[in-house]
Image (cartoon, rainbow, N blue to C red; front, top):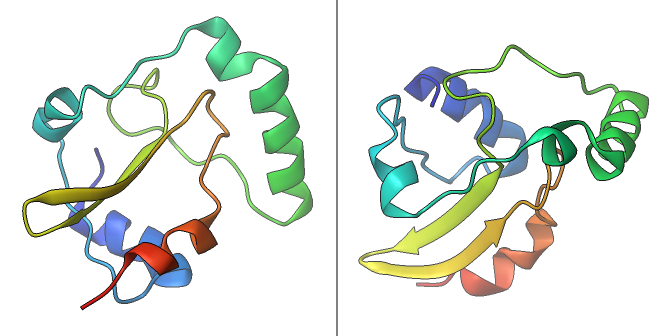
Length: 106
């Protein structure tokens, strides 16, 4: 839900060749039926554990953009096909980025 520049900055360290889509109006979030969390998903043990691990790596929680209750969801689209998807179970549930590489091809 951020700007194109914020998306590019996020992807730069993870996957420099990837393109992200800015969606401040949540049209794709709705189309992909991205879930919203509650107190447990945002502040429960899983989210806290991941937050501690991230902090220990030097990563910190930034300012929320858009709907703060939206769970992390990552969708890899090639052409018109969804070739990979990760739906976060809690606020800190991000994918293992190496899972994506085998799915990306010519």
